[in-house]
Length: 342
Length: 289
Image 1 (cartoon, rainbow over the protein chains, first blue to last red):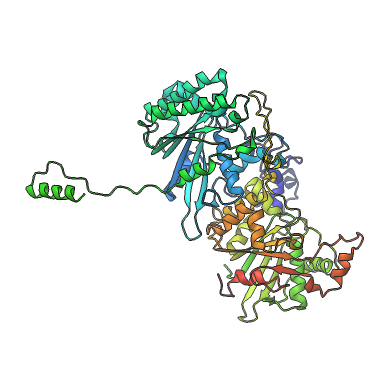
Image 2: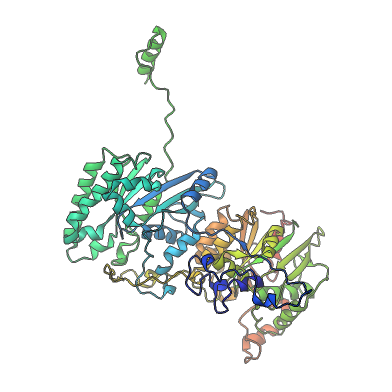
């Protein structure tokens, strides 16, 4: 593999070993010194001497997150479940995704075995700041950039080696983009991940909701976001809409934990009342994907959430619709018999 | 594709070189009976001889440096059927895989090797095994960390591929074999847990499921391999000093044994010292799945 050692014209660059550009260019392919096609030493070869054959390194799959185009290609070959995570900045979307990855890193989870992921590198990139070898004392996930398009994480999950895996795809995007779309609804059409999602999850930051200073505006804006997406047709294809109250460790660790819990209970009732009848399969759930403030709470609600997301789809109703006001007498009679039998 | 050509797959320090040295001595010396025997002695065996010499003398076999050796190949034969098998140690240093993980690039030679392989010997080590420990894991059930106030957060450290948990790296690389440019159908994979003498587990399967659960799930899902087995292997037989270090009583003990009997193999009915058993299974000659 010696040909990989000359990936960069700069002698001090360790890109071949670490994958990182010495000059900080990302992606590394944009660096002008990357993957030199020849070196000055080659020019110095005496004429007539055959130059050493340069073997181009071969690219392997990136393993990073999928973009909309990648997902379309993936969808042509595989049926998949699609979940869109929607929420304001720092609501915990990426943390939730990283936590699901962590759970499978520790063993079978929610009745499923890990059977592969097209986006394992994407997961690893989101999770590295939670590892002990990150030299941090406070686990976190990297911030999702506002300029990044929607990204999709993939998990193939199987019940047994004999069955085909189920493909779960979870979308992630910066909270600012969703915040902007709430205020200016013309931006909603630029969020394709919602249109193709079978399940939309609105993430409610329980930590923010517990802060007296922020709760009034935040609780209003949260409901406004659901309404904005629903009123502008972004949820038209979703079969399930759920609210996930995240960071449930924060209210518990707070001095006025009881008051915060009461407020959250009341707010849950309000939200259920307001959306239960207008949104399909609506539910309100509490989760904790990174129990930093109170470890005793554990990964609350995460396993149930994965079970919900991966539950077998209801079988389609294939019964013949009843005949109403049939023209022929025989059909009217048939309808009567059918109704009596039912 | 040769139906009995197997490749070795493992990151640096996973025990491939010691395995190669011990296997070479085992089949060359014929001190104990094995499922497979040595095939034709044709080729350049300088490197194998060098590491086998070190192994025989009771010294730690030194880790292979990437520029030290190109290819190591051991030919084997099944005495019952006469079938010939080849074990290719094309990346004895393990650097090819580590670079491929970090840079997402590999060589045509590696692509060809994968195309020609019909099974895979995957190496992990039980030595100093700590993988993917999180900050929360170290806190304990009653621990707590204060939330970082908004705006106080410093620039995130960029992701360094080399800090990725070993099991994630291995799953990613094995998955890559299923996609372009390899496009390999899954094959049999025999996992070798090297330095097995350092564990207190009795079952290699249990150790593997406990220590590398993501990789274990992947291999058993049917997506990563048509079948997978885990063997615990101590190719040295115990801890050995580096050449030049003070000899230890354990080395003396091991040297007093018939050299091939230093080897310990655990799992799936393998005879106690038979390093060829995983290869015998990979070949399918045992008729078992």
